Image (cartoon, rainbow, N blue to C red):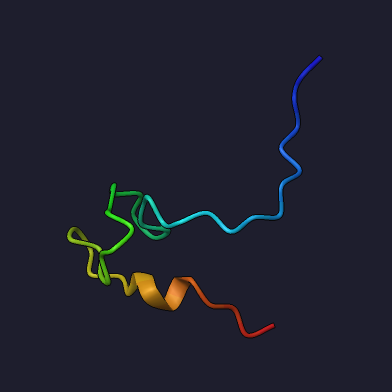
Length: 45
């Protein structure tokens, strides 16, 4: 039987959501593609 992760905790950004490059959680922008990582942390819905 497979374990299912049901946690609702927000994980820190460890990779760029656009290109998948590994980034530090303190980075504001992806070093590979320039995506704004701080903008990814908030959701307006």
